Every structure is written in structure tokens, then in C-alpha cells.
Image 1 (cartoon, one colour):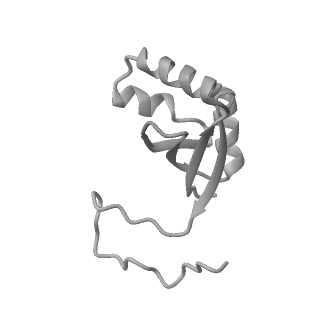
Image 2 (cartoon, one colour):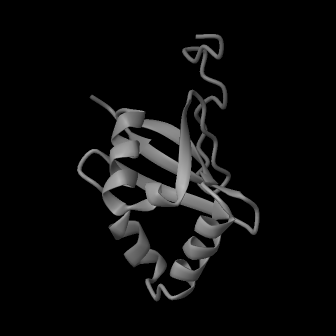
Image 3 (cartoon, rainbow, N blue to C red):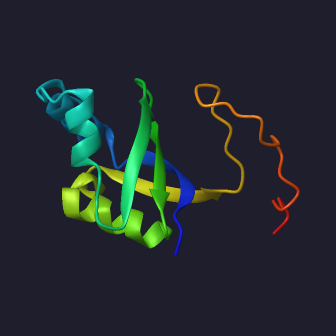
Length: 112
């Protein structure tokens, strides 16, 4: 089965877990390459993340199912800090990786 793209929206359980999460990552000395390796699992991998000072942050995942993502979050302990909603993306365009392929493939049904 091929991997699909998912956008995960993570929302902190509370102000206390948000504080603990940011304290934990402030002490993390991993490089970006090490981060990518740490977030690669047998059935899924996180390929990008965006975080600010808000009560939520976002991750881009490649996975066969959203269940595999939730299992990875549980196994890493991230689910002790956040609730996560995963949404499969039917379309993905990245300005850093452009091609001459159609931007909006006709095989994609946004109403499915």
C-alpha cells in the first residue's frame, strides 16, 4: 500500500502540558537531520513541522493510515502533551519541489 499525506493538528492538553513540552524541546540539542531520523517509523514518518507560541502546532506526515500516526505519537509519548487530529490531504503542492506535472490532477476528488 502506498503512503498518503496527512496534516496533523496538535492541541495541547493544558497550559501545563504546553509549558512542559516547550521546556523539553528547549533542552533538545538534536540537529534537523537527527530530528528527521527520530520521527521516522516503520509505517509512517513526519516530514515537516510548524510551531509557534500558540496552543497548537502542525505536522506533515507520510503514512498509510492516520492510525499509524497516532501509534507513533503514543510510542514517543507526544500524546501525553497533545490531542491530535489527522487529516488526509488529497492535494499537495510544495514550492520547494516544483515540476511540470498538473497542479490540480483530475483524479483528485475534493468531495469524496
